[in-house]
Image (cartoon, rainbow, N blue to C red; front, side):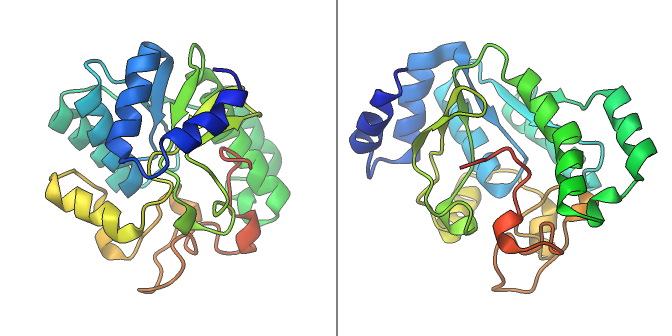
Length: 234
């Protein structure tokens, strides 16, 4: 895709349903498009949509080695529910061992720099391998989620990874996500029922009070404008 086409696609699909957007891109890119899933609510919605649109959907997730037991359980439940096999990418063993040896097991609490280094080892490097052979990656981002995402578009060029990023749910509100989950009986992480609106690695995620900012339980010791792992630079 030419970068100049991105603006045209945003205009073309303005106001379109996510299912229509996904169907178009799946038809156009075939096995060169994949859903990157963190197993959150939005990604579960997209998993359902992608499985309806593609005969052989490409879906992958990143296992950082620090996920919640409920998240691991959801991987198996999702595979069984849709008859698929989500590809799981792990960090390089030597890189994790070096990180822990040099900085400690929970060094990410000490500084933003060390937290980002942990994310680099456990998320960004495996993500680079997952992207091999792809031209488009589907993400579950929504503008409502945080201040770092409020200016994102439906279709974007990801300069860092050299790919087109597709955000079919970018304009959805949380209520719309839950409505889809319930209407289509989509399996979801049980932690969402325990005050976890956003779920990542276990040491970096905590429950929040009802009505609190959706991302406030992620890296809660940092300023809100820093709470990204580096996957979604804008």
